[in-house]
Length: 200
Image (tube, rainbow, N blue to C red; front, side, top):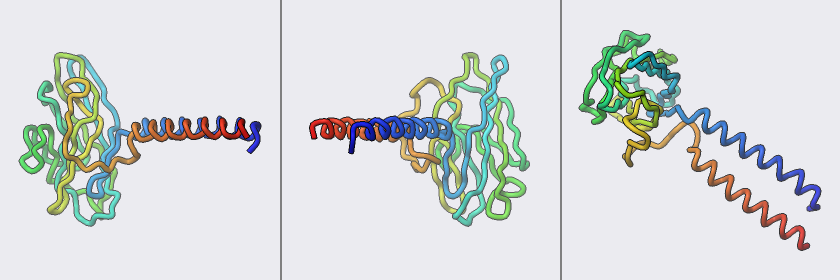
């Protein structure tokens, strides 16, 4: 391959990798667990109060209706209120099923599932003296007899407060770290290719 063609290919490859990185950042706030996609929508603040909003929808192929889902909340926050579009019952505290401490929504009418896929909005308002912190926190779902836990953007105590946990790593897109690693490997390969071409 000529030097001119390599120069044309190299910028195109870099542009593609950067676009993939940006796409990964934009969609990293979603997770799919047991056929249910939970997406972080927004976090708004008013004084000591912060409201965290999520979208939940059935995407399949699992056939079971959603029994409940739980968002872990750092103990530094106090529960104030919640809203949802399905008259779900809410409980704030430790979820005995998954072990997460936070807000659990269950017994929705109708239940989210194949017949009522959504999406539906859920919000929780919390109080904290210090400014709220946004970070990946555990989120879990129960459908049928199955349970699964993943990570989603939510209210955290401090940066990097969430340690290593057993969770179902099936996020909407591969992690940003994977994209960065791919970019480094690809860039190194192109540099070596150019050197070999110049020697030839």
